[in-house]
Amino acid sequence: MAEHCETAQSGAGPAETGREPHGWLGLAFIAPSMVFVTGLFVIPLAMTLWMSLYDWPLLGRQTFICLDNYVELFGDGQLWQSLGFTLLYTALVTAAILTVAFPLALLVDRPLRSAGIFRTVYFMPVVIGFGAASTLWMWLLNPDSGVFSRVLLGLGLVDVAPRPLESFWPALAVIILAVVWKTAGFTMVILLTGLQSIPQDVVEAAKIDGAGIFGRFRRITLPLMRNALLLALVLNVTSSMLAFDQFFIITQGGPENSTISAVFSIYLASFSSYRLGYGSTLSFALLVVLVAISSMQLSFLRDRPEEGR
Amino acid sequence: MTRPAPALAPAATSGPSVTDRLGYSAYFLVALLLAIIFLMPIVWSFANSFKPAAEALANPVALFSKAFSLENYRRLENVGAGWYVYAANSVAIALGTVLLTILISVPAGYGFSKFRFPGQSLIFMVVMATMMIPFQSILTPLFLVLKILGLQNSLFGLVLVYTTFQLPFSIFMMRNAFDAVPGALIEAARIDGASQWTLVRRIMLPLALPGAATVAMFAFLNAWNEFLAALIFLSDQTKFTLPIMLVNVSSGIYGIIDWGALQAGITLTMVPCILLFLLLQRYYVRGLTAGAVK
Image (tube, rainbow over all chains, first blue to last red; front, side, top):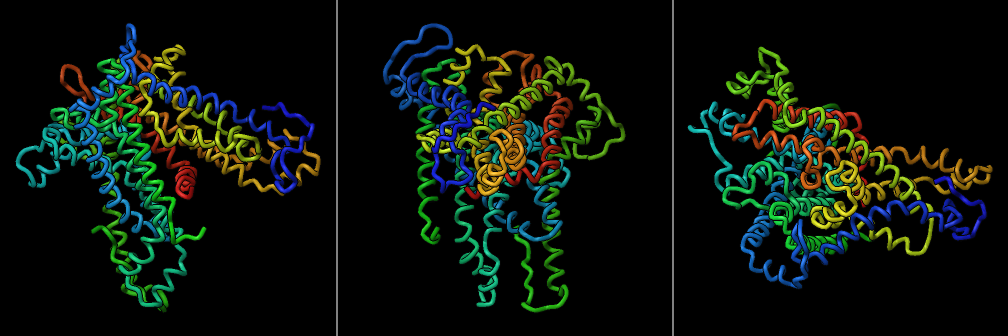
């Protein structure tokens, strides 16, 4: 890192003060990161497409089968079911997270000491991992030794311990509950940054003009928070499309394989059936879906007419 | 629904009015109730990890037990290679990822911020693309690359993978940190005869330190908590990390799950994260807002 030449090549003009005079040295600084990104991102990315054209068992010879994997993909009922499930889960969980996180952000958006403490508490589940959180909820939901069934029985709300993981909709509902608990704090902080970027004088002016609390929320808060809301949306949609831990650990794909997410089905193809070629085909399909969703959302982010930046 | 009653303060009042105080109490009660809801799962697991098995089964809801017991933690020593092996693996992987991420992203951030060379923006875009295309979608070839490199089923291989996918965020953070160092300051130091190395050491690095702290914290938490890659890339019993151990405990032996040991494991896994977050909260929030204003 210490290799530096004192011969001042005039790589940058005098206008760019603060820039190092010899531009090429910059390449040396970023070279290590290039090695990593190339070796463990760009090459595997290219390999995804290449491997998807092969019958590629973990052991034994791989054979070129052209588009056979893609033909199989189109006829794979379980895959389409899991993709549909992932989209359903993404839509529901994103809506649920925003519905919880927005009021939370409004609640703690106060210049009070207590608001700071509440913010910290709501955020706490975010920092514990999805793996630990999933096993924790697996216990909470257990009908025999978990807390939830005990509390519900104790309050007299149910007569028998509920077994939510044994049918589809209750299973999905409790997973969403767990994920909202785990991640609402994150979205709350994103929305809070948006709320705090609203200039106070605009709010005051609206108050003086006689705008009510709901009018102010709809006409001022929501439009001015557009970017924070969209960012929260993009981040939640992407992470939900890639959900794996909670379905692998809590529902284990059940009941009757109805909660196998997209990443879960890649895992099953590549590392349970050891069909690496078909797994790559699924990866590539997921990639296309993800990029399509991201670019759709990004184009929303890009055109913001109300801001003359 | 959970929205607090808004403080309907008239424009000019001296001192807190009755409606003000009412509004504050409503806010405080609602916020407190929500805080309890958010905390309880963590507290329950923590409390049950110290209960003897019989008592935990009899009353899992109770927060305090008459008998304080470490038997759950002791039983965790017999899970696979023993919890301390898995904890040591997790620590090694998390610290390795922190170290490597810092070593690579700090110079890279400096390079992207303070130098101009052809192809720079293209390279930056490629690095940032890593953020758009998450590793979950290239797992299969990544597995093969590690196998070819002889790094499959190795903690070091996993550190390399974690570091790579930590890089876009980290380089972005570090570039912003170096961008914030004013050019005038650098010019002044240079006029005063500071060498390139002195400049980096005395001006750049100290000013970039908070950014590096944020990068380190995110790298630690993400590496500590990651589950899917660890599940796929590690196949050796003695190389598992804490999240993998948790899942092995939670799948039970002969259909019987040792809930006490599981809670002890969950506590061991989550407490370091919570402590780290409470201590370095400010750096964590900085990282989040850096992403939000981008």
